[in-house]
Image (cartoon, rainbow, N blue to C red):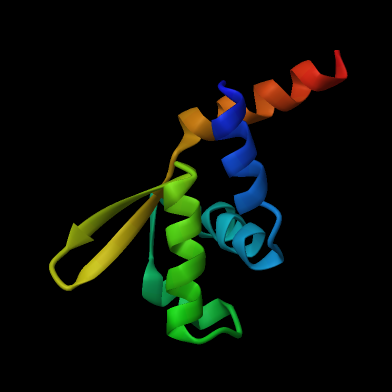
Length: 92
């Protein structure tokens, strides 16, 4: 993983709300999560949730897919695994 991507992911994960969004995927145990699902659990306005989702998409941690008027989000396991591996290399 390139340092630039590592930095971008680290910055995206530096916010507690973004961590909560990623944890939503684990709790749902589904492949995708809709923006409305996240709005229901976080005590944030819809524009704030959209901002946090955009940060996670920009860091390649989430993949967005438009479905009609809704957007569904998928966890990018490949990038997350590469980030975890890069973190493990730091301690080696």
